[in-house]
Length: 250
Image 1: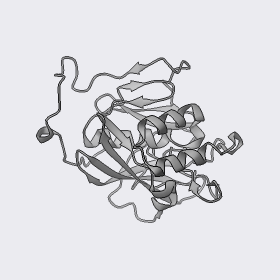
Image 2 (image 1 turned 90 degrees about the horizontal axis):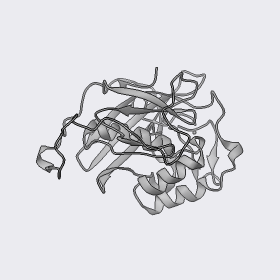
Image 3 (image 1 turned 30 degrees about the vertical axis):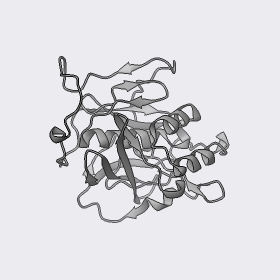
Image 4 (image 1 turned 90 degrees about the vertical axis):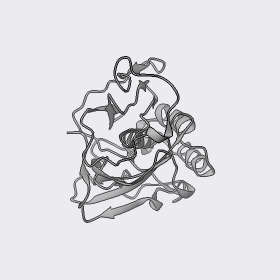
């Protein structure tokens, strides 16, 4: 994702979240956002078979203990540097991060799940789930992601209904998506993480932030839909990158 996390025109139209210039969904109700841009030379690890899972190395390494979490031992310190063990893979034309330690542990052609209950896990989840919930990744990805991995709410249902009305011809074309350049944690607890993702608009020295919120529920991080399903409520232009951790596909 992007220096302070904000949606560039067209996250993930955020990984995690950006939006295409001027494109609004459902009579101005929603602006589609994407976490990362197109045109990045990365290799996709996703299979063509929607049922084929790719499993990342288990958190904690071989032999790591399995059992209920102890809330008192969960990490809460916000890291000051970007995760080191991240590779970037393509979902559609949008890069998303994969970390051996932070997840996702389970990747299929349509979904990604199994994120660490840590600040790094929240960061990866926010980018992955935000990006996978945007229109340009394709309905075969955004529909199961939103219905299974976004926190249930009326806002989510509003956004999902709007996406279902958008014609396939509105998908972003190569070069129209913004590029993730960094992020900034705004707050973190083991229950809720709020992270701003920063992206650069295509062809311009303009930066946008999308504020992404994830909550821990049912054993994994879940993406929280903006109020009313309206991405303009969590999107802003960024003129100062102070405090933003540089991060994104190279």
